[in-house]
Image 1: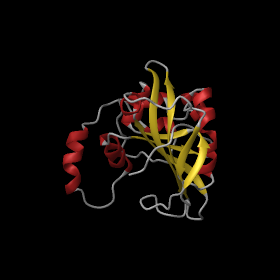
Image 2: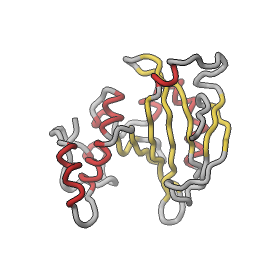
Image 3: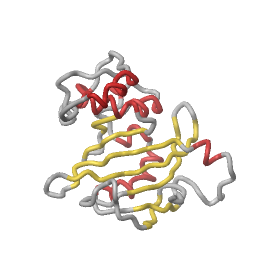
Image 4: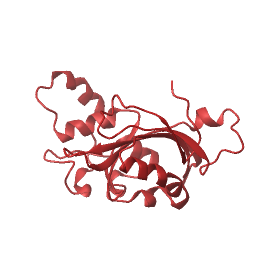
Length: 201
């Protein structure tokens, strides 16, 4: 689905971030321990593609600037058909509207963790768990959001859910200032209208 150019940059044109020749992720992963020096973008993209979690990055304009293979496969679209599109185009009006308060909070510097419904165009109603991680520049200004998404449909719908829960109901969201490192955020409960609460372990 996606290949990598040698001179690609995460700050370049979104459409130039992928090519159509395949990448052998297993071979790349096996070679990573032998790499020396910093990884270039093609290697970082290969690592992201090897992960089972769906990963994306959106800018302040809410356009997708980065999408890993897992997310593209889940949308059932080539990456080139996702990059550059706005979230409302990809999610649909109802699901996007339910996430707007979470996006606003994340762009305000608060990390958001929640569960919500997603109306997939071919697979029907799905459940997802998402983590919106603010990405700040050197001056502390949020320039975009890292999206970490997992499909939890099987876990969520194999047991009865409260009838009051829907994509527009309240959820528990964990927040942390963008100045903190994403790996060790300070989280607190924050209600928002996006989906069902998730217990944190």
